[in-house]
Length: 200
Image (cartoon, rainbow, N blue to C red; front, side, top):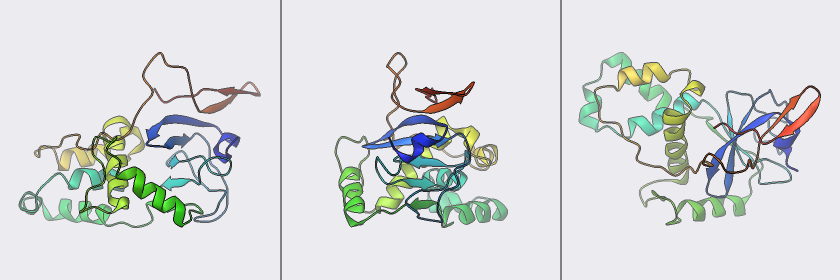
């Protein structure tokens, strides 16, 4: 049993070997980067923590969505944005503290790099990307298209970038199809644990 299994959460899908979860309650763990991570329903978590794979907590989901969206337009197109809209997008695009690696060691980072380079992904890591960029774009695409309710700025971002040709370019997240048995997620209902809480 992993750390995430001690809390209500829903299973979203997989990014390679990393399951994607969304906490359904506030998790009070250790500080930033702690083995027993902290998270809220505003976060996504890759890996379940102790007992599974060390967690990677995604913060500021609106910033991750912008990293996917903004990379779709050219510099010339970006110059046509109103100054306030461009400043808004730049602020999110360059924001830090979005990826919290919770007690990852060198082997975990190396394994993530190897996974991201795998040809089994529709869009594996390219030579001009860092693993963090690839991860942010893959997860930002998921947030933009499939989890807009988790992005507090979804409507604003859609409005600012409406005139540009935005397309799903990553398609790296796998989601369990309807009809398959549940494989993750937990809620407590009437004092009893219920397993198999999927987003879709």
